[in-house]
Length: 207
Image (cartoon, rainbow, N blue to C red):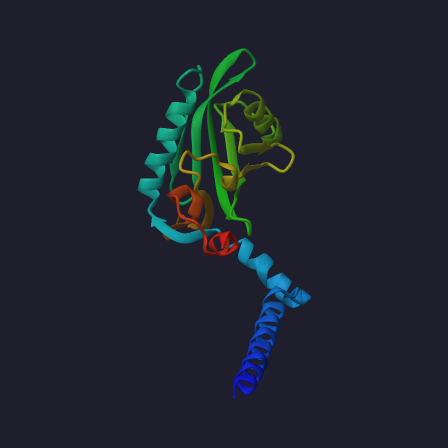
């Protein structure tokens, strides 16, 4: 009986070892390429996304508060009015004089969440200058953030909203910008790390 007991014990132990080895190989064996692509997609999932809706009045106050801070140490003055289009008004040095600047721009939302402001009409006081020439003066003399680029040749202003540096580390994109309908929506991406939250993918890796 003792010999049979030992024999059965060894058989059971062998079976258990085989099962453990099989499960270990199944878990540790490299995954095929389709599953690797799925893991790469999970790696990008490091944030939550929100849609924030606002009005022309609220956004106008925010934009001009930003401009006031941007221009406080300069001699230049200009402001933005969000009406049925984007209306920029200010002063521009031309021919050793300062003349009033007025430009109406049509906002066009791009697929990447940035905006192109296409020039509709432009003037500098009573001076008759080509539109491109006026925009060259704007590019040369008008202080703008690093993420704003004035392109005189295309007669447009490119606003790279996604390049804005924010203290919160949030990422901003324009989702909808219809001034006539007063429908403005911004897409806000909040990285988990900003809130001290570890993503599920990183949590799995730490295990």
